[in-house]
Image 1: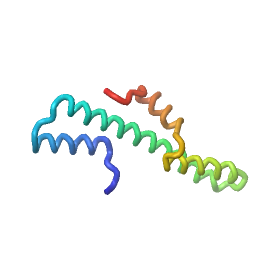
Image 2 (image 1 turned 135 degrees about the horizontal axis):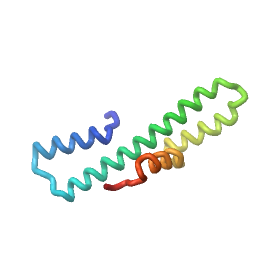
Image 3 (image 1 turned 60 degrees about the vertical axis):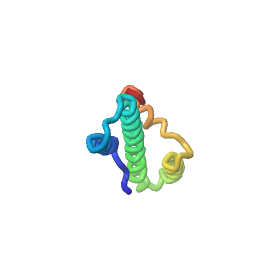
Image 4 (image 1 turned 90 degrees about the vertical axis):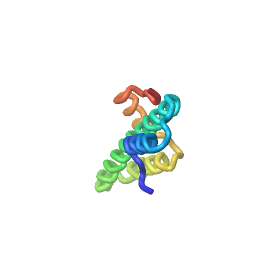
Length: 102
């Protein structure tokens, strides 16, 4: 199964709600909280992907190879959950106010 965007997740929840039994306010708050968290993760991942693409472009310059290998290793560690992408988190917080919940 491919990744689901926060918007796709929210649309699916709305469709399910209209076909079955209506959700309570508390249940909808949980759906919205999950959608916000999903969106936050996707924004951070997108920023990291941009960093990775930039580094791969820089790898065409031989004098930067050692530095780039170290940095790409860090990117891989972040993608595998062994480190955090503080710049992506900072970007999210600055752009979207750092609010994980509504």
